[in-house]
Length: 339
Image 1 (cartoon, one colour):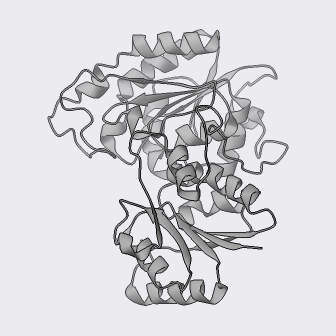
Image 2 (cartoon, one colour):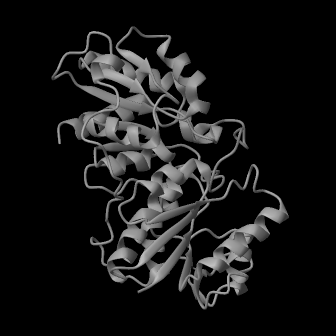
């Protein structure tokens, strides 16, 4: 009987990609108790995982950002008497928590900040998928196919809001696609005018289009929708993460930037087309379910310009986005819809 803590205080996409590792841990250590230390934005993901028994929430950018809060979390972790800690998150803060946890069996990556905090260091392989890297962390031996375990999130049986309430004049049997045009990083965003061309294609196919994202994407989605009629609906910030996954399950496909919605689409196991602007699939965050594809214009000396992206294009051309023409994207969408 093990009591295991996973430390993952990164972004939503990273949290989703931690779930296959957690699912496998629950299988390896059958009957174990498994807790996850996460941030407020990702608690919903872990709380709705069938493999997670409890979440501990650290608001590291808010009320828990000071040193006193860090000490309180160290005390909390110590009192839980965990038998193992796995930390896919590689920050200095995570390493400090591990170092003073009092836990003997601690596992972290070789490129972690303050890596001496971990008893067992696992080589971080930059050229494989994030799910595979996380499996390396727990010692799960996989092959070319069996690593593609989809993240499991408990879903309700019906939509939180009927599709008829989301789309005007929506009829049972109508089709809709989802577009997620936002990202924290501007250089990850496919050009707005190009997304509009993609939407025109869906409308010609008699699809409804839902523009999905977080609260920060609301103005962007409303701006895009303003150029169309009621068949294009801006819904950024209106649904929780779990609700968004359930809505995605009802859709025909998702077109997304290299951002969190990509991984929600993989959870829903629908066709996902991910568009890479300043980043590349080789970083290991591409959609990996069998129905999904990705596109990236790579013939540029400046690409990739960073693992996350920037507020502005460093060379002021944004060629990585503009050279990925709508015709290329639409051709791939047609291929996926007819597959």
